[in-house]
Amino acid sequence: MPDRIVLTQISSTAWEHPADRAALQALRAIPGFDEVVRKVMGLIGERGVRLFFTADAVRVSDRQRPKLNALYSEVLETLDHQGERPELFVSQTPFVNAMAVGFERPFIVLNSGALSLLDREERRVLIGHELGHIMSGHATYTTIALILLRAGFTAIPGLGLIALPIQLALLEWSRKAELSADRAGLLASQDPTVTMGMYLKFAGGTSGDDESSLDEFLIQAEEYEIGGHAIDGVLKVLNLLFRSHPFNTARAAELQHWQKSGAYDRIIGGDYPRRGSEERPLGEDMADAASYYGEQSRRAAASVNDVLNRARDAFNSAFRGPSNGGGAPGGSAPPA
Image (tube, rainbow, N blue to C red; front, side):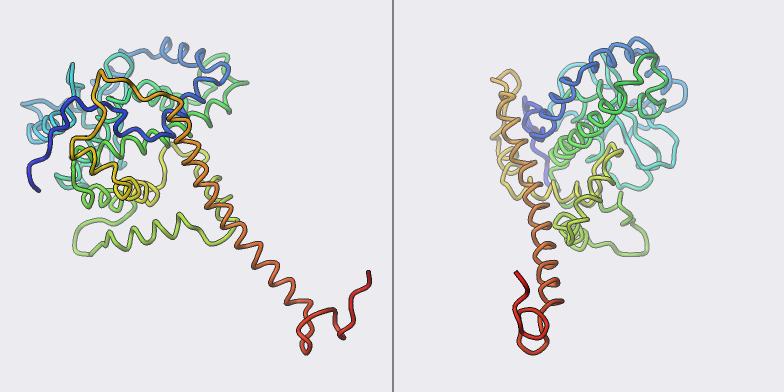
């Protein structure tokens, strides 16, 4: 791939999904949420989170996994990260995942399972994704979600009554935050095929002696997005309800939509918000989020209407006479 463009002074608002900030605003508005944040940070704290990975993971540096460290440096340069360099750890676990966690000084953790699955350019996407989380200020809320979802709300005294609303709102925000970070990963890579191909691998399209097709995966993503039955919309909601990440097909499709919208090309061409410039008003995000959710609803409604039309046709056919094509059996009109 040609040399990547350094996105000098890029603001995180350039890649943030409109539903991300809107969902976070809704989360903060839930009564008791501030108390949850205060209790979790007081109970665990920055030192507790960092100490866990210092004890049982490998901290990447010039002398420890130097090739991965060099790749990380390239991503930091491409996204023009300013300030203290977030620490990067590798954790030995087969689960294909990575995370950006911490409070005052967030850091990145890459699971060895993800590094084993991905090639060098796909690792670039993954690191860019996690750096995007940090630059967007996601790490605090991601850490809180991780602690609460793994330990359970009952582990934090006094949170029982407000547990479920906050849990569902945290997960909804987390899913939208992933869409933002996916865009950051694409900007770090600047190769849409590699970036969307990473989600193909996450979904099961592995490398090796067999072939995987990104085109077929995107067709599959479109099939999932459109759906074929009203019940599909309900099942999608239920399947996502307690997930922190969107499905991989949906993530690839969202990136494809973003690229086709022209937003990605405009950023690569230098047309993007800079740090220190006037921030995007939250009202615009809320309007865009409403448009996004509205489009999702319209798709679901179209699916429902299609099913209702088919049900109406089936009902009419069941009561249509075999010879005259209409009316009640025997050709007479039904009683009034």
